[in-house]
Length: 275
Image (cartoon, helix red, strand yellow):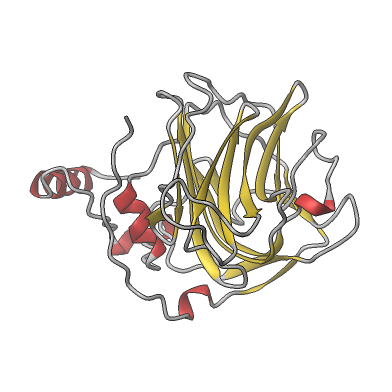
């Protein structure tokens, strides 16, 4: 629990920063911070309609906003979609769903010549409404820091790969909607029925590590900070990787060296505001 001196010190930091986000945490309170991803979950390719996946024993609270961030490596991505996190209710399909789609090549952008190389889209579903956006820096077979952000304020949503916002196009979805509680959460598959109805073509094939969900839209500067392997930030307020009860179905856990790789610094610009 924070004491008065912590609150006072945090207030001083906020005043000195003049409204800019400067991630900070107390060394004495590292248990509330992510220091480094240490455990990854491996989802192998399968023809089974029941595996592999992780089933959360709990549910989500009502959400007016969310941010989902994770480290992920895909070995294969389907044009049907390869899904990281799925949340379903008995009466509502795709209440919350995030993943990656393979785009047929060549890709024809809204401006400029067609792309010769394979490109991918990140995707958010809320209340079975979808937003997909091309992310040119997503590469199969490489670790990426992926973030999905949605708020019911005008249905705004953003998607990031390695701290860079995917800006080709964005559809506003689920305006003023509140994501309902009492649903079922699955990692690594897309649910066509609550807790099941899996399709192998829509499974995540690869690794997932350090998945967290917050009940607020994180700022671009916070997301970029996390993507650079700076892990002194609060864990997810809604879901906290491997600190929530999970049931593993044919998923292999192992140590991960995601932050031992050489992550090249990239220029970062504040994204344009929505219209």
